Length: 142
Image (cartoon, rainbow, N blue to C red):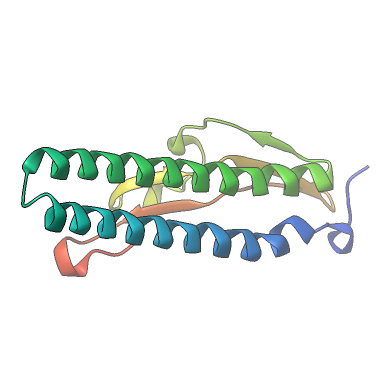
């Protein structure tokens, strides 16, 4: 039996706001700490480039791990939303299958989240996040 529109559980999506704030704040703190470490290394080691390279590599690694954690958390929210409503999630999708042709070729750095296949009141739809970037330099927008 399909859900009625008023029976859909939006709690996981409502909780998303809190989760994103914590991840965003953590990312800003990590970046700030990495910059402070690099500046401290510059100051204390008298411009020895070996330490600068090590600091830059460590900062890049940490920032990459935080971005990976944020992506996992974003996808976990979709999974919780689907589970709460008895729907299923399609993983590792190719964007060509879901993104309308009118916007599928626009921009660069296109990313598509996991897709929630929803069914309610006799309708079926696919719900997902789609991000892309347009412009270059100062006019770059996501």
